[in-house]
Figure 1 (cartoon, helix red, strand yellow):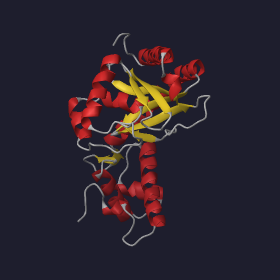
Figure 2 (tube, rainbow, N blue to C red):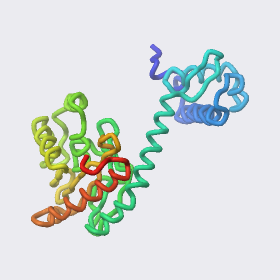
Figure 3 (cartoon, helix red, strand yellow):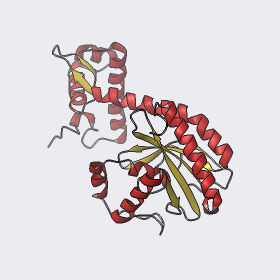
Figure 4 (cartoon, rainbow, N blue to C red):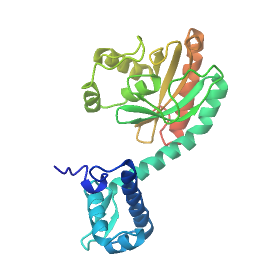
Length: 270
């Protein structure tokens, strides 16, 4: 049965090869580029522009409309879909966030000597969109562009603590979670207690829950609506996060996150 979410016209032909699938994706990209350039176009114009016959263009455009990549007006012309516009806006926001945060990340790396991360949430994952290596031997698991589950690591647990009750219910449907180390918080009760503590003190502390011997501290970054849009975290060997050293790291990381939040429009103290 054909699914509206997986139209046959966007899949590789039955019994086809990986190369066939790549060719289809190439046509999809050509359509998107055509509509980005023209603003709107019908099947005939799209067919001429990307070098396919009109019936193939119509099937491709129809399939792309069905999964939200395109919109169609009453005259039968196609435009880029609203979902693509929203996705582009999200990418632009994250690029702006990275650009705004970069000086603070560099300063935090210089002041602490630790590896510094800028992390955002994507569904139930924490994604690293910037990373500046520290002076210690690099044993950090999270890489630029890499992900961890939200229940793992200081940055992810800060983002987890920012979720609404409904979002947390959705996340906890998958509990208990896999442990990366014996110290990983994996049960709903453990994580609810950590969420309460994180919200109360304004930061999350990760002690060997991702990698044995490694600790991390995560602090939220807010936008003008007081929404948590990212986390800044510092990570290094566990001994760096003990005794009075921890207090210094908390103060410096919180100050950096506060300055990024202010640059994003958050009012001090929000």
